[in-house]
Image (cartoon, rainbow, N blue to C red):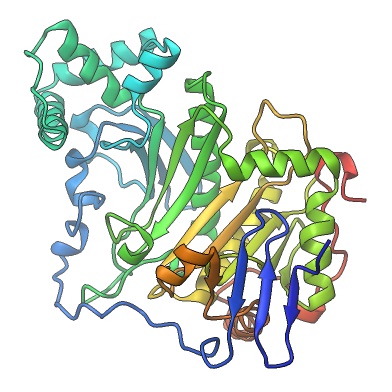
Length: 434
């Protein structure tokens, strides 16, 4: 196999992803370009408006689909989950996190119903009936249905008809969910550009954000038996594909693996320790390990179209919801630290990867954080060679330096950084990586 990461005599860095085969070049003179944030929005924001800036804000909760669950944190720090609140009780507690169906699904309930014979569970239909029995719930649902048919260019079914009830049920039963964090702006913000990203959360908040998403992932699989895989991702800022500049993750059930996952399953069949050999050993060899804690390791990624960082769980468990709370927290801590080192003004994609529950090949839970600081253009489209502005060594150097500052300031959880990292072994699949 050709070495996945090489630096040529003139300074050009060539990368080939060991997992996807993606080819990336970083050329001298472009790799040192700074991360350019979007143009700041200097509009002043009042205390009243801070919670009403977008449809994901807490002051506009009736503009989303009916809530599936929320996380509420008491004054002593204990957290509890409330499921299926009626519209009349949405304001009775202050959620830290909410989950609900995406109004404009990538894969709709109609898709699952038509192609896989999916039926609305009796409990979901009963909840829909109870929800619209309240005036607040009825008004919310009618507004959502009107918005959906308007966007699709179709007609609204007559209220109370079987077709109308099916459309109502779909608002509650969707398998494309959104998990939304509380803040649009950081606490005390005075201007609209003071956005609350994943790295601006404190350690405990980010742990709850990840754990809540893990539980939402388990529930999507449970609710959609025909799903082969559930994609989990976070688009941060509009240049990275976000429809709202409000911190949120999305979970989308699909009925196939997709090309990348299918390729990895073949590679993992050939080498059960694939991720140790192809990723972590490569990172160690080239000095790309950026952080380590008890149950996870973070590295600068090789062969990504954008400068990227990766977090791998080092736990024996593979499915996210099979990890212990301590293992989930450790994974969340490294991911949080990478977001904090990146900065809230940098557009990014966070992608989760896990073994499909129906697959037998060993595969660790991992996340990739991509800095969307360049735009693919004609060269990339014509050659399939991606020009990346920052090579993995530069990514590692920047992040390691920033992590030292953040750790010293107490803004991230305790962790080993850079050369301090030891015991770099992935233990997924009953010690498969050994």
